[in-house]
Structures are given as C-alpha cells and as structure tokens.
Image 1: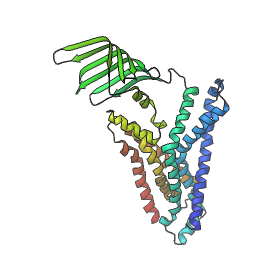
Image 2: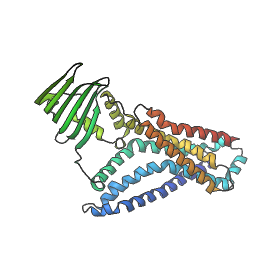
Image 3: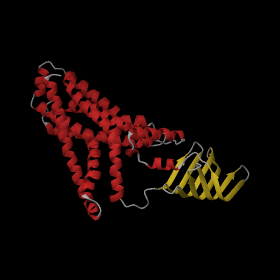
Image 4: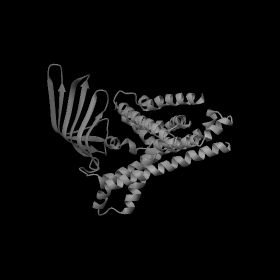
Length: 361
C-alpha cells in the first residue's frame, strides 16, 4: 500500500466510525425519552442493570443495524470532500486509474464486512437475547409465565398436525391438545384430550379425558377413555426450542434448529432461513454500497457535498425498502428465501457496476 492508500483508508474508517458515533447517541436518546417512565416505575431496577443489561446490548444491536447506513453516508461525505478539494483530479492527473483508486476503499469495506459478519453470526444474537430478557422482565407486561407456551402448533409430517392451547414447560403438562391426520385434504382421524402430561422417565405422554374420531368412507368411529399412555414424534423440548426467537440464536444454533425442524417435517422454515441468510448478505453489501457511494461522489458537482448526500441518502432508503420487502416475501411459505434475501444486493450490485463503468470513462 502506498501513502495515498493509507490516506484514503484512514479517512474511510475514521469517517465511518464518526458517522456511527453520531447515529448511536441519537437512537439512545430517543429510546431513553420513550422508556424513562417505565424505568422509574420499577423500584427494584438499578442504574447498573439498565446500562449493563439493556443499553450496552441496545448499542451493540443498533450499531450493527446502522452499520450499512453509516458506511454509505461516510463514503459519500469524505469522497465528496476529496472531489470538492480537487484531490481526485490530482489523483487522476498522476495516472491513477479509477480501479486503482478503489483499492483502499475495498480494503476498508473488507474490514467493515469482517466485523459485521462476526457480529451478525455470533455477538448480536447473544446480545439480543440479554436485551430481550430485560425487556420481558421490566418493560413488557407479562400475561403468562415465561415457562408457558400458548397457542402452539406443529406440522409433524405432510399429513399430521399437532395443536396445544397451553403447555407449562416447568410442569410438563398442558391442556386442550389435538392431533389431526389427513389423507390429502380430507380428515382421516382426530385425537383430542383435555389434558396432556409428559412422563420423562419413560418418554411417553399421558392423555386425560381423551377422544379419538376415525373417519371412514361411509361411517365414523369414536373411541374415548379416561387415561391413555402413548408416544408421539415430538417432545416438550420441541415446544421450547421453537419458542426461541431466531434473532436470539447464533448461527450454529440457528442452523441446528433448522436441521432438527426439517427432520421433524416442518415445512415452512423460511422466516428462520431469511434470518440466517441476511446475516451474510448485509455485510457483503458493504462492497456494493461502497462502490455506489464512490460512483456517485467522485466527481465535483455544482451543488457540492449536499447534493451528493441527498442523492446518497435517497439511494440508501430505497435499498432499505427493497431489503425489508425482500425479507417479508422471503418468509412466505413456498418462496425461495435465499433468492429473496439476495435480490436487493443483486439489483444494487448491477447499479454499482453501471456506476463503475460510467466512472471509468
């Protein structure tokens, strides 16, 4: 690397960190103003818990969230400054090509991408888990015990569906249980029970006040009883595992969860796949956003930095809009989650390539 490369890389990273450090206090201030009443109402809540358990993890989460925006604004700002000071003109006059000029930019993007990848896959999920536990304890009204799973359904295979209204993971008991077996779209049998208990010792379920209805072509048969010991292809661990939010699982845990769920026959895992895939797609966008920002700001314009910044922020918000739409569409059953997550990067990557070739002229 030459002196010019170190100069641009230093400006890249310092402007990026400065922009990020401006955005984070604004987010913290808005959040404090919104939640100060709730903090004051909790008599047992200490300042240390607020800072250590909540705002420390709040900052980690939003620093990661704002990273693409901060990166894009930073590159627009300091590249526009270079252009307005005719420094880029001097660089071009010294026979430095536009491709060579991008070299330190992409080194900076690689550093940011590596940090974002490690945060997305490992640090942010564990941080979110602590933050959400704090919110659940102090900021949100608790209607039910944390160990209680409500309105839980599970597709066991192509033709079998399970539903339970309530299950207490601590007591291993629940009520209003049903399991339906279908032949195509026709109901073949339905087993219901007022109560269900998990017997961990022998890995069986005990049903109380159960009733089973079997549907044949010309008649129905109904069987019932007081108690029934039986086995199913699920355990209470499946209730607890699925209840954990995808954002709170690091990537190895999330991959394991998806594999286990697929083995259990759960069909729609797109919401979890979208969360997994975007942990990689967003950091990779650092290269695309850097190239777009340089392509927009490398020439001196009549409006100066203000015009470049306005155009850049507009492009950034369009990208964020595309990103959110893609996440929603990717989570729909039957959609290609991987393709949907990467569509914004593909579209804006093509735009970045256009700006690159246009800048080389």
